[in-house]
Length: 130
Figure 1: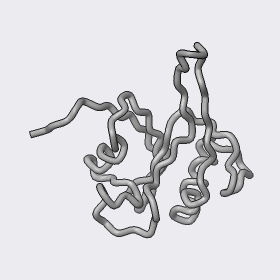
Figure 2: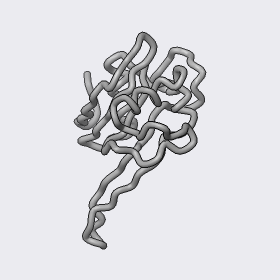
Figure 3: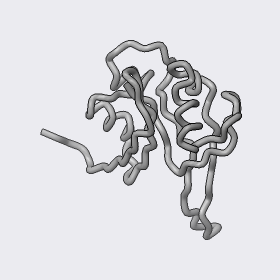
Figure 4: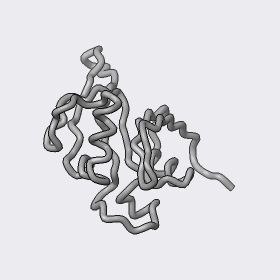
């Protein structure tokens, strides 16, 4: 039997190879471990996820990053937009696989380095999965 509350995760595969995929993820609900659970359920667990990914890999943490978060701030009565650069460790995944994909798909600007990819152009999170 399936238990738990309903949750909806929308994703778009930007690119993939035989080892990984870079995806843009939009959460329509906010459940604990939602991205991790949903990707594991479809057979594509995140790199570095030792709870939902039983296959060994060398990534030291979950390969999951929120590039842009937007929410309504009711006290200030305005939308708040937060942006975060791609961490260096994710840029190094699969010989800069994600970095190259994100340049190709216009998510980051060409010439940005692994230390600071500048302002992300996407409005969603992304993950690297097997």
